[in-house]
Image (cartoon, rainbow, N blue to C red; front, side, top):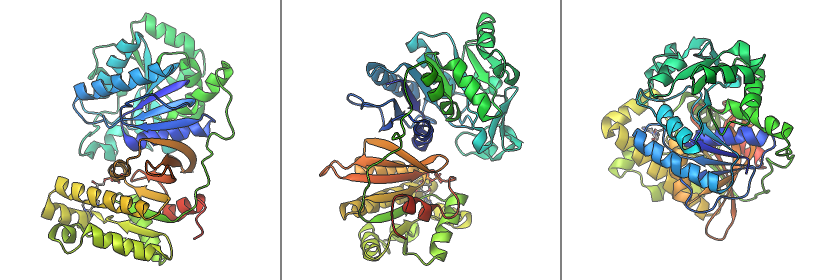
Length: 422
Ligand code: ADP
């Protein structure tokens, strides 16, 4: 193994894995702290859910993941977080970085959430989301990790006792390695790195390929494979993104209420395709049940791929949350959709699209899936993946879409990409 990645959330793990596969690295994603040996691959991504849990727990889980990756021989470790640097004043990016640096006995790393292809750029240490500063973007209202300061040096310095410096954009296209050495001489242990374009990311990756630890969004992963290749560590493989051809029925389960998913559901319905709506209030009061929804989905699915969805617009979600409570509504819908997805797979579905980060986590858990092989991207950040079902060892194709990814026709595009005739 060349690269071992520790990701702080589920769909973020798939995002970075997709980036590595695109550059020709055979990549496997492991769900949760591995409890045994790791599979053979150029890169292994351990998907944790540590973004907003208490810092000591995030540190503990990250160190366990590190141990497993080290035992499997990883040359370099990559701590992956969100491209908007989602964290609270207490962490967890700083504390996890500190702990990984100590465990790896290293005195220098970088921090770079930039992902220019998705509009996340860093200039003189300030993170932009599109044309807006992070602190002026929608992220300032995030319910769990509101980001109210765009200066990443300041944000990270508040989370760590180590000195945070800045690797400025103009150093990247010059002597980046020399500038890194100078920063270390000045006492910096973590350098926030600017990046305005993919070529900045490539230069940064080249300068960091031999660091024991890199911390970043998924962008830096774009450049690492070619840096490894130049060092003779690996040859890109044309078959890295290849999955088995899987036949069998297809279905979609959607528990995301993000804007992009609402548009995707609307599009699917407008095309007159089969769909079953889950109504959380009816489900709560017994007017709907998982068994009845599953039965209806199976009946509809006999003729064409069916969509089962709880997706609603913001007004309706507010009403439902008011009636049931925010958390209770979320848990009710997640567990119902997970049970329906598991029922569909039990009934033979082998190509399954899931919309929603939390929803994906619940579905994958209900299916008992522990590993995903990463395949070709459907759109930036969302690849088809392949799992093996414990029972019978059948292959199952899964596309796990985080809420705001994908264009309006994503569901049909995903199914067609998996060979479904629509
Ligand atoms: P996203 O990736 O868009 O954030 P998630 O699956 O992570 O999607 O989160 C959506 C949350 O909203 C889940 O907890 C889901 O169960 C919940 N949810 C889905 N539909 C509804 C609804 N109609 N009313 C209230 N909550 C809902």
